[in-house]
Image (cartoon, rainbow, N blue to C red; front, side, top):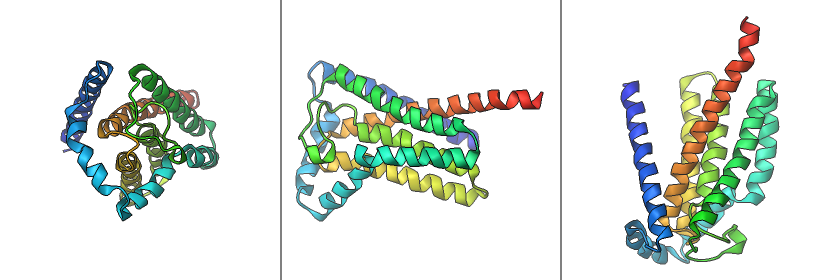
Length: 216
């Protein structure tokens, strides 16, 4: 069962990366992906509704005014929980790396936003969504490091489900408040997951290296 689940996740991830590369190719050739053509009407219907207002608040959980102090505080928390600087460094520097990686891709693709909203950190280029991409790494690492310190499968699962839901809500908020196209958000999720997977693997490798002298 576990192998099947891993295979399914791997398949979804590979499809996501292929779609992201296809969307990048289309956008760099001035072609609007079909997904964005099909999903623009929903955004206009949600404007000035209670749903829009709710997601306008949710989007702040992925904005720099919240994430910068949050990363600093959680880095200290992880250092205290693990009595080791490695989790704090992977978390803080990994989130920072993801930000600059996002900026680099945006500079490469140069897609214009559907609308500018300075109050919601929505300036500059659009693809991929920084909120979706950085939230995937930031909150994904929080879920990973917290669940490693918890005892009991139910507690671990609760933490993972909570942060997975938060990541989805933050990313989708950018589409709903009309500062990103849907493909921007989906690509942000896929690329962010790639970064998250790599950072977790890097942490596990470095943690094993740290532990190996003591084993000897």
